[in-house]
Amino acid sequence: MFMFKAKMEEIAKKKDTKIVLALDFPFISLNSQKSLFHKAKNVIDEVYPHICAVKINHHLVLPLGTFQGVKKLIEIIHEKNLPVIMDCKANDIGATNKVIAEYYYSAGFDAIIANPFVGWDEGLKPIFDMAKKMHRGVILLVYMSHKGAQEGYGQFIYDKGKEEKIAQYVSFARKALKWGADGVVVGATVPEKIKEIHNILGDKIPIYSPGIGIQGGRGISALNAGASYLIVGRSITLAENPNETVKKLIEKLKMS
Image (cartoon, rainbow, N blue to C red; front, side):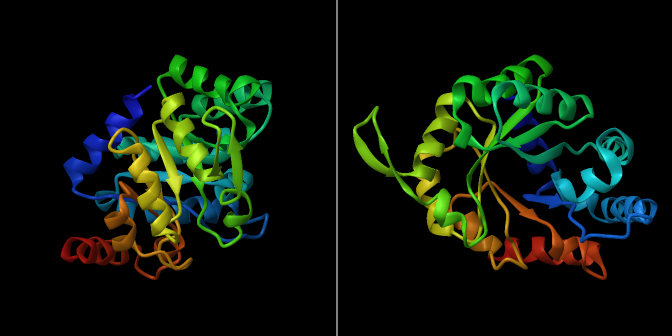
């Protein structure tokens, strides 16, 4: 299970970067899939020397197709020796989650992001089983980067096992350890949560922090709080010069 985790650590160290590119683009005309594919490819070609992985969301899967354009992009990314994460936030019954994982892993994704809300038995267990079988990774969504995350991930629950009242995200962090996740997602917009979750996980599980830039998250604050990787999307993909943008971000992080 930890092959993906080790691969990420190796690439990040070798390239001296903690940036994961979120290949996100706005809605386009349904007749413009070809141009979207080339736009995504061009961004990859520009920034790949400065990133340690690529994250793909529904922004590309829906218009390009999992086994059509997206699979081709994955092959291009793999040729540059970068892992690819699918941000599907899998959150269904076990039978459906198993199919979701098998399709995305078969398309070439090295890891998928899953939502712990559905629990383990007949929930996320089939995803972890499939990841183990196919030598892939699972990253758990512990606290999102948007303001409304507090309503779900920040709510308090009663932990019967420990007979205590805890925040939902604390429960999810503990489950990441128990289930053997390869990483967790915690928004860069909440560095105080990153710090709290890092205190739970230690160095056993890396933290991926999205929300840098447009959403208001600061890379320096996230890293200082305990994040291992910074997920950066629109600040790079929508920039006039993505290459210069990511280089400036890395330089700023190194100066801090």
